[in-house]
Length: 146
Image 1: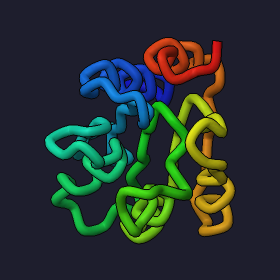
Image 2 (image 1 turned 135 degrees about the vertical axis):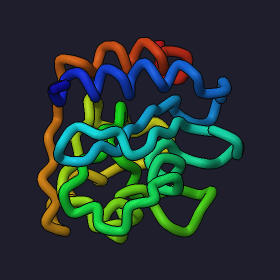
Image 3 (image 1 turned 180 degrees about the vertical axis):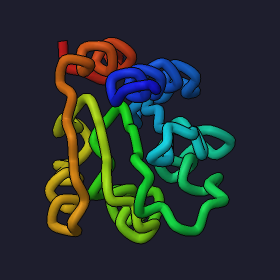
């Protein structure tokens, strides 16, 4: 069965499909059931110029009970956004997901993010795998200060 590293690496690879943007990160997300079944995937700006990866993936899930699912996101789920009223951290909580794995904490380029803290406060197990963060930074290099 694939590991957290495998699913997170796949989410990072998926983020390469994001249409380019100078005002938003390129992010990939997977929603995976406990048995390793991929329930849905999504990436930033997939079919909508302001959709976030987690929002896209969760919007495709047909399962009602996601308590045993894990959301794998290349970037920490957002806690503030201008384009929609509900953040990805809040969408994950509302969906009942109890576990989130991500590679890179969102840098304070567009906003200060505390998505991991919001998720933990909501009872979600949050796992950060920073050894995969370099791949996420590389995909978003055009946004980073030189």
